[in-house]
Length: 90
Image: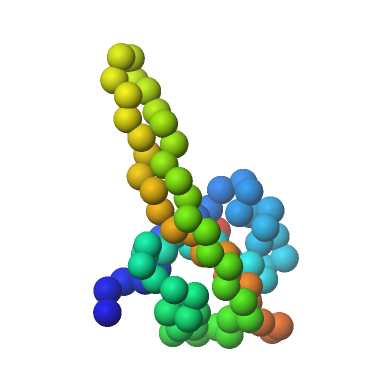
């Protein structure tokens, strides 16, 4: 099984989502499902997961001079931790 959790996403928006410490946002593998993400987070960080929401982030068009391109598409997972579980990535 290949890596499920690729990186935590730490931005101002995700800091606002996880201000109370119950929600954490991760960049995950595109072919991972919610059950696999739950198992990966629980085993990697030794916490209990209550809920997992996922969304596919589309590529954004970018331009440098006359050259156009796009950012990479990826899958994002918002993980809600159970009561008593805390995870601080900042």
